[in-house]
Amino acid sequence: MRIATRLETFYDQCAAFLEELMQHHHLEMPAQLKRDLLQYQWAVLVHYDRQDDFLLKLQYNLHEYIQGCRVAEPIAFEEGECLYHVVVKPRLSGNVEQFAREVVWYGRKGGTFFYSVNSLSTAVPPFSLAH
Image (cartoon, rainbow, N blue to C red; front, side):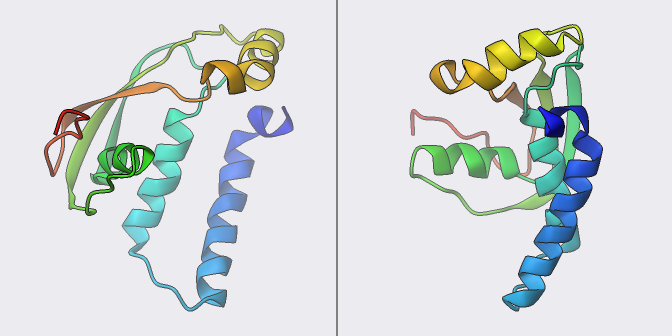
């Protein structure tokens, strides 16, 4: 719950940790990909005070890549403008108690940790389970 009420601080710390981890292991990643990764993660996690759907603009096809990984069929990262519609549901109207109960407590059972994401335009075709 502390993280949920201080998301900006949490993601600043995640960015610093990612940078330190990569330096320690002598890894390289384009700066834009790191920004997109953290921005995507911030966008898809259910939060108690988001009220409206929103657009997410990235420079990499992270959504398609992650969807592929979830079904053991990862695709290649592609660079190019990707636009996504993030569907904010459930809308918790700033109700921290409801968030704690429905997302934090019951979320593991119902999979309510993440918002739905629809690809509007991407560098590659949207991932489909039917291929």
